[in-house]
Length: 183
Image (cartoon, rainbow, N blue to C red):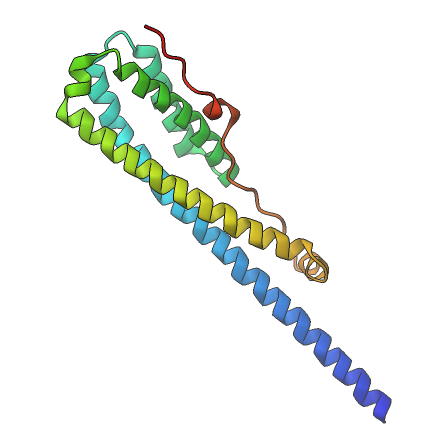
């Protein structure tokens, strides 16, 4: 009789541990999704600014058609991206071409003095700062989640409920390179 009670207590304890870990993983995974949505909101704000920025630059920098086309193309790749990974890649491309666009503006003093362009540039900088903070929060949240599903006994329970590793938001190699300035 005592052995049966001990076995039942162990089974109940194991069930409680599994439930506890499963709930922990659900909670952490929801935090990852929320953190990604915060990045997505900031990226969307940046993408909404781009048409205005391109139109403003177009009026002054008529010889920079290729750069403007690349900005528009990168923006459109983001809007058609279906997964977080595709959006991260498109974001890296856009960051790279936006830095080139800002460098192009250096060659046009009238553009640099344009109030609309200066306001758009300020808004873009503010959004870029928010994206940076959101990306840091996302990566911290993903790291905590990934660690929890990899450590014992969490990895066993995570495998039972199909919790998988989430990707970190990494800067694309092209975006890491500093733009070249030529006069």
